Image (cartoon, rainbow, N blue to C red; front, side, top):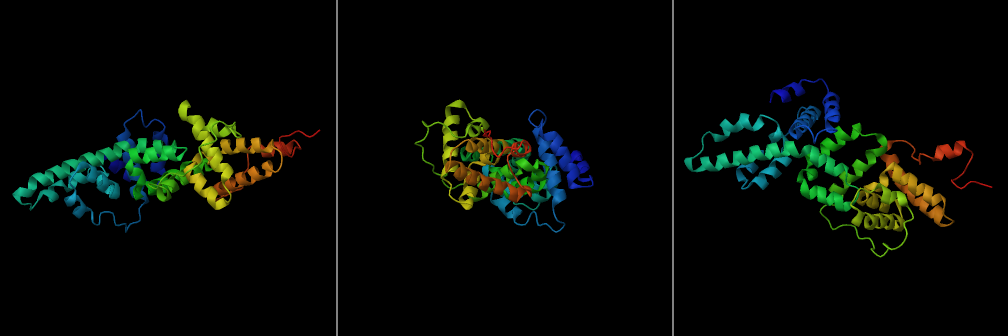
Amino acid sequence: MLIFKLLLTIGAVSSVVFLIARYRRNARKKDPEQFGILVLAAWIKSLPPDAQLMEGAYEEFRQAKSLSEMHSLVHRYPMLAVPGFVENTETPLMQGLQPSEVLRQRQRLTWLKQAAKDMRCSMPFAIESLYQSQIHYELRAAVEKFPILTSEFFQTISSTIFCPFIPKEFRSVLVYQLRWIQECYPKPPLIVSQNHDQQPMLFQSIEAGLKAKSEIKTHWAHEIEQAFLRCDSKDNMRIVAMNYPLLLRPAVQGGIDAAADELEEPRRSDYSAKLRWLQELREEIEGHFVESWWRPIMREQGLESLRRRT
């Protein structure tokens, strides 16, 4: 509780977030609950003065019948996870109860304390699980393991606290991961034809960018490539990007660009146009023109493409 009060005396949200950024790298090795406390402090400092944080919480608390329901309650009302909050309200919550209600209220308080601690401790692992998800299978697994990812609280801290501290070129990945949670979960996964696993990959950077186990890596790479190749509009590319945020990574896009540049027409122009849609999605978030890192180098060398003119 003392640590939390000290954090709230820091003059700006950015100062707390700076501590989070420094702590995040070693969050698994250190006490993960401390990371959760830092996040809660930054979240509270970002709230408007008139924020209604607890309206309806008590009635839902009284109706909770399990630890699982209490976890959902804490996700909806993250103030309950603030260190000391439950302890400070415990006495008022126990006052005026009928004898028959005392044991049930104590059980609910026990669940609430456990749920609050679980939320604080799980925060670094939930965040890392989301950030490392590169395909809808991994996103779905992350959400099902860490339900807090679907909460309004998590969407808020990700977009307002973490996103600004991510390098611009990677920011769109997080944005589209969050959009997948908002717009695609828990709907059925995107259906892509699975009949291309035996064909050679056109874009090796897709498979190189995946961190999956070898037995599914090639399969996923083919699925991502086919989703990219079959896309026929920028709006559809938004859906593809939500399901395959790997495609928004600069290194993957640079590899696609280089491979497409080696193809004959009309495929070269067709695939370059699809890539341009992906780059435009990044431009909407990054706020500047996006192109492959090697393009300016080629222009300086007087080359229009990777193919050296003779």
